[in-house]
Length: 87
Picture 1: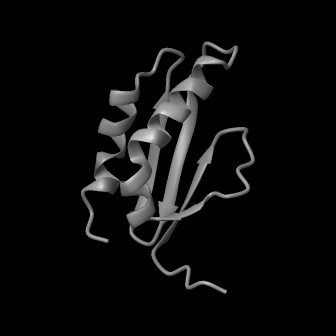
Picture 2: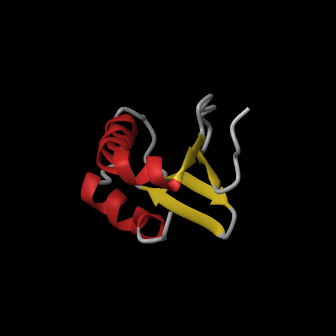
């Protein structure tokens, strides 16, 4: 069993993510790809209301609204609070 201290739980409203626990190091490494995947997923959703992305962990409680036309750069800017933290 891996040590999950420092792990984050990331979830999208209404979506069950089986592999939702990540570390900050992993998030930093894959942030651009994750943001692009989230944008692509959001564009395929047929709802005009914002969908909520949350990240929770030790010292982290982030909530991001994803409007229908959210851009990859906007997602990265909102995740910056996590990406700027030391590993």
